[in-house]
Amino acid sequence: MNLNVDGARLLRDLKELSTIGNVGKGGSRLALSEEDMAARRWLRDRMEQAGLDASIDGIGNVFGYTPGAERYLLIGSHTDTVPMGGWLDGALGVMTGLEIARAFMAAGAPGPVGIGVVSFSDEEGTIVSLLGSRVFGGSLTWDEVAQAKGADGRTLAEARAAAGLADAEIARIDPQRHAGYIEIHIEQGPVLESEGRAVGIVTEIVGIRRARATFHGRADHAGTTPMAARSDAAQAMFAFATAFRDFVQTHGGPNTVFNLGGAKIAPGAFNVVPERAELLVEYRSPSLEALDRIEAAMPELAQVAAAQARATGSVVLAGGEPSAAMAPSMIGHLTRAAQRLQLSSRTMPSGAGHDAMSMASQIPAGMLFVPSIGGRSHTPEEDTAPDDIVAGLRVMAEATGTILEEFAAGK
Image (tube, rainbow, N blue to C red; front, side, top):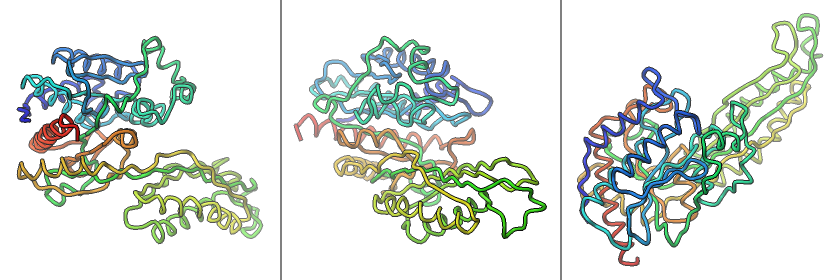
């Protein structure tokens, strides 16, 4: 099936969407905020103009289906952003899906399999990470997340009501109706650009785990208390950070990364020995075994570090996401599409979480990356060359054609 997509139209749509929530060079569309909902209503209207059956569900997911089909290939991502984020993260996947749906409609290709375009809610985790795709995919229920709170102190239930969604039905995946899912995204890293590759075909999305390491000591005068007599929570935290880094570098494997993302020390004065310290830890890997090794090692690392500083320490897990393998069939379709278009490609894991993770356990899922200039993302400097955006669109459209043919044949 040949889908004649319009790259210039995709670029115009992306630029127009970027004006919603725009602040200078960057922009913010935090989940279920006024800016986020304005973008979702704009998208729904765009879908309707393209002839799609469009709706916004009870947690903000936006769907647009080509009419008349019994089963659908879903194409999408998200349109919410991090605070002062860039113009492509998530938006590229949604607007690419809409452009492919337009081409499908223009081709007059109704049949048993159509295209569903989706913008999932709160992928970025303003309230709950991957909220829309996880609820749609069934790994979370509304009751489990209704009382979750965002940074503004509102519960999800309150934010949903303020957005005017309280009476709308929450959509759920139906594997009999939803036959597969593909997503295009900027890489958010430097690999494709540094290698001069046009696209990357994602093989797997890394698992993510988070923890809080907390240490307790005793507040004393920092000038009069001898070093050997101190119970210093901060020194315990710093020793743990070093030991954690060394353990991950030695035992985590080549594709494991970590981040020490936040530290708090109390009382936080020049002349008081710290009585409490907390470190926020995140680690990511496509290997379940590596994640388990790190998780199992942290309590002992904390205890050893605390003992050296005559303090106490503990580690509490703070959530995360399991790793997700992309379907071999979708990897194959995307790979062959790039080959037919004579575009250079490589396979690669994703070090960031994406909505495709939530879909992969329910239906065949695939992901395509395009280069990020300078590897930058989650910043106003985020950018991708227009030619690379259009190349990614062409690969997605080419792969969509063969996927639809396969699904229509009942394979």
